[in-house]
Length: 349
Image (tube, rainbow, N blue to C red):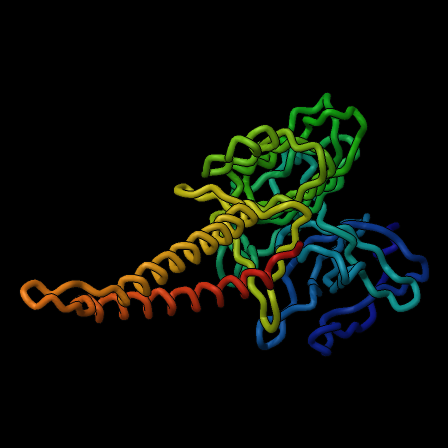
């Protein structure tokens, strides 16, 4: 007989705090599978992961009870009419579920497993119950293609985390590198393909060691960077999606680079050093120009001209214009000098 086949005692739900069903009298702990009846919610439709399950004994009898996650820090909430693996604490007869059991004919579907032995229907109907909140997406989400040694975390909806390594014998988007030594890579993505692909996954984060990753950049690279566009032999953090947002709640956003910061768009390709160096050169040339304009207008404003028919001399009729031009050049020179001082404070060396 199964360890779960004895008479049951009253049991109190962990979340609702009221009797749900009962517990076994068995002293021994054991392992079995159960069929999920429902996820237990409180009045605000929140849950701690507790579920109602049906446990079948070897004699064919069925018992309805509850189970809570074996590891509350790391678990997937089951859905009604899925099967879960159960273990029981012999001290208090508490059931724990360690994970969701896939069908015997598992083909990689990740969204929903309709494999319960005891089917639960929506109340008053012949429709299979799939939860009060969960929405089934049939045949749309499948498992990653996994390889020996991979560690993966996969959701029902297409999100995944893969911890893998370089292997030249496996064709993946990151298996190219100059070294044949297995090196680690971590890939977090939202996507629906069995193999991660930056071009098609809606959003991705890659943490590489030395892998060559073909990133589908949309702007052209300058010639000095083109060679490392794909074949970059050092570690990278790759973020790719429709939009990348960096925000700071109370303080700065800091970008700190050993070399420079490249900004590439459809219209411009430059790095920060070149832009600021060019601005510095422009300031020098503008100051030279304002000096020339000042000197020229200062000279012109003091020149005198012979008045025809009178034989006397007088200042130029353009004197007001020369004075205005001199003052404007002086004002520009002052402003440019101020910009030069501020720019100098930005310079690292």
